Structures are given as C-alpha cells and as structure tokens.
Image: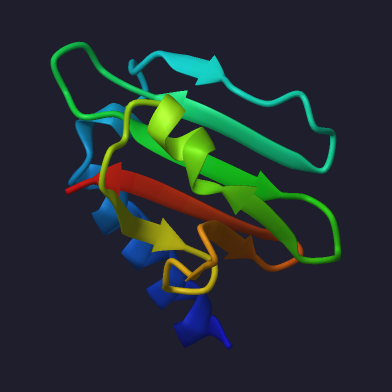
Length: 106
C-alpha cells in the first residue's frame, strides 16, 4: 500500500508541475453550485485553462461536455484523475463516487 500511495502522489505532482494553470498563484473560478459535484476552472493569464471536477458523492455522477466547453476547453484531454482516464459516454464524463478529474485542452 505505501508504494501505491507514493506512486499516486508522484503522478499528481508530475501532472501539476506540467500545468502552470494548476500553480498556487493561478486564479480559480467556481463553475457549479451543485453540493455533490464541484466544478471549477484554474487558469493563469496567458496559459491554457484546466477544468476540474470533484465528485464528493459516494455514487457516480455524469457531467455534460458542454460544461467543459463553456470553461474554455475545446478539446478535452485527461491530465490526471482518480481513475487514470477520462471516461466519456454519450457526450458526458462519467465520474465515479469520491473521485476527481483534471482536464486540459489539447
């Protein structure tokens, strides 16, 4: 288990280091008011934005791709997540319970 936890933290750190929009000084704009699915956009001026979705519910949730497009991301690409992939079904992102995803633009 310690090796898995270390690898997960390392992957998160690497993904964050590659995205200036995830830096500590990057502005954050909250996009949703849903108390079970938090969505927000991080974006440093002059940098590509990152869309973040966090499902705090124990059950899976779906998120329309339109929400990501509205956040300024035309071509969604997986940056990092709980599952290790970006699962899109019928124009919606499938997010398992208690999971998150970082989405960038290609």
